[in-house]
Length: 508
Picture (spheres, rainbow, N blue to C red):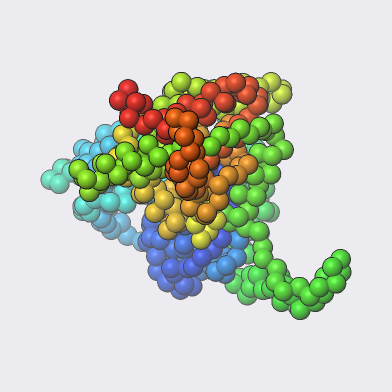
């Protein structure tokens, strides 16, 4: 009898602990395949599709659209299609790993380490995918299907294995299969080879505190299987979770329960103010992460702010002059971004991070390069995608990358890497029509530069009053990494570059 498998919501990147279920792509009773997208979820950083690691029939969907699910909790239950333990050996197609951008092999001969690794992976996951990270496939998930010899059942363990053969290769007997080097039976992880335990098993053991070094494996050659870890955790708990899967009737109750009080509360009166309650909005998704990071920034970072008014007329005139020679002229933010990367090279203290060890000791971590974060306002909230290795890009290249990142961020398609790898943030709040802001540092960075609106103002030039294009620059910095002199030096460097752009650009 086939056992229903419960797929738990994986960590979709950057240690996120929850995700909001946007929609289901499948329904109960549907037949699904490995790596088929089953749901769309919205994390605190982007909207992603979650692929299924199992093939079979959907037994239960754990959650309703709009519900927030915790990482590690059940997402979907799948019942594998029963093949019958006593069925006669039947030749079946096996999909060989295709060459991918990660450099996977294509058409490896039978019996090679790559095939042994793929065999161990299939043995452990039983037609399931150990790779649930968005943007990666699974070994055997792509390529050309080929006919192989019949499956052979091990009398000792009852496990089923299939070794793919090259076209025209002779069928190997049981003796040849028994001579395989069991040291090669390792799972396959994207980009590298793991230990003798699959990624899912390692994660399960880590989350439940199971010591894999002291755990005997029931698989072939002592391979530690998922069932071994489950038995070590708690047999009743495993059985309880397995039995709970086929009971779809019990799930809707807790999902619908919190909705009723919320609707009734919105019609009540607030006890403190005496005013009627118009609505209650849960703090979740991007808004929850922004609130957490801002609160952490204010509680941990002793910040200070310096600002200066800048005559941006020279930069505006430079850009207007470029328009006459080319249709593709970088935006003002791209020029300022170029000045920022140059300034951080001169004042590297502002391109660092403070790390605190368990014993309370702290270190200032410096970086060989700049990942420039660009604050972008979206319908989902404020996000900060970063231009990686920004110091290597020209103003035109920065302009193109800033536009691309802003676009994907507003679509909710930015990757966790793009949203979580910044080392310094540039915030153009001038687009909202304001001059300045005492910004909050984007933790764990140590500084953020804000640019206000550019407007006409009276300005003294060569002893005479004139109307100039003026903007305000604001730098908020972590006083632990530098003093005011360093912060002021960096800010003045950027201001001078804006006022005399041709001088700086000639040296870049």
